[in-house]
Image 1: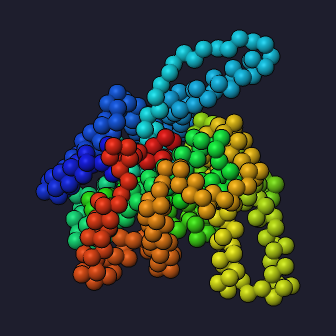
Image 2: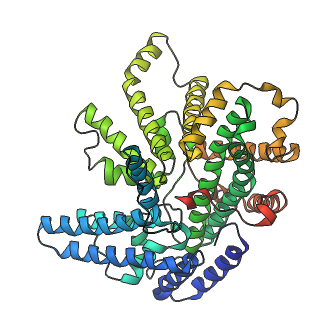
Length: 494
């Protein structure tokens, strides 16, 4: 069930209406039923996987808390993590493993080994697996108490707004709110208004920008034989916009839907393309995942506490694993490695850059300086996204070759740029939508609040006008996919 579908348009109001009239003590039971139904709408059989993850990590939490010896706690934690990662490996990385193993075997003249299984990737498995593992680590560290109520814990893992593409919630935030559902006021006017505004903005980003520019990006990648520098460069920038509008749009809808219900999910995007450096970018992009890797991998590896070399090695390991988390392909791993190298270079040359700025008497607070930092960071992240989008080394190589060797500026004047899925009218709508995105992002950057909170501070007539404009714009100009079928979100593949 997609957020941008008629099914969800029916599902969410019904779930919310029943939720609001139920007694507080049983609200979480209803949300659990709704969450399981939401997940089973993709593939009913795969509910077994999330139930397995819930059962294993629930038991792990209780056993870890009761264990007397630290060594016993470590063994239980290790076994539980291994069980969850084993399922993730089986369904997400088994093909990748056999493909690479068979490549090595063929290189030494040994026949290929056939894969014993062939599974479809279960939607959301990377997200709920990490969320459940994070809970167990929190219990092991003594940061939270193990949850005794299995239904409440099951809701923590499967909460439908953020189940299939995040944010990857922390037990200290989401689970604590679920525990307090019987004690606090859940339904508020401010929550509904703010949440509804977030949901509309998320749909705008998805249907006005991501799905529209995605048509152009897909057409370029599918027809590289007829592209040159201009088309590939436009596709690279287009994918930067697509993946942001798509994933940040999903997060906005998820956070908004939860807020309507009275649950506050963690922030996942904070104007990442206004970042002034790569380290700053990762403080703003997919915050729930980057902080997860920081807290559960980078810091346990030693973080920056054991010297420069160890710090950079830990960065490299963390980002390579992050790349692999995104997908079973070497292009994702390379993408992660590129971002690690970016940060290492950024850190190494920081003193040099500061000395140069001081020698040249550069005003580092000037708009021109900040704009230069933002622009350069966007170029770096856009280049890295090429590796992320390519999905195979052969496609990556051809894309880069055409980007740097097939100069064709004439496509901007002979209308051939319109042969990649978007005509002049669609391009105008796209540029107008991106302009709106830039304005809203700038306001969000300056106000340091999300769009729902910003709208809540405005007068009611203004809010109503904004809501009407967003609804009408999405209905009239939104992209609904082939034959008006809803387009899935990019991160459903991860």
